[in-house]
Image: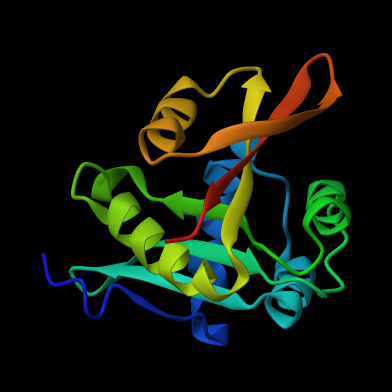
Length: 163
């Protein structure tokens, strides 16, 4: 797979595809309409689409320190790490494009861009559990640093030193 053109900045032309992907995976994410996506793109340090076979296969949103992003998990990391992190808020890959190494390639790129700040941080659902995501992140060297939430929606806050 040619990874050189895997990610490109999200444009207004991508909004419908991104919202559709988010809607189809909302149980692992949070709801998002066009206005919210526009707001998130303005705050994000990376708002990229994942391109495979000439199609939008997914998207990724990353927030650097100092963003106005209103996520409680992002704010926890801000308080804990100051300006020494990049926060991977959401990544979605359409099911028809899975098992092609896209997630690993995207993580390689996002982790590389986090090197100047020292770590990439994120959260993964543990109640209800998202076992495939937990296994993927653990295999990449992420470790839990905290848990947040109440019964029925608990997340593992994870970090991986950038290298």
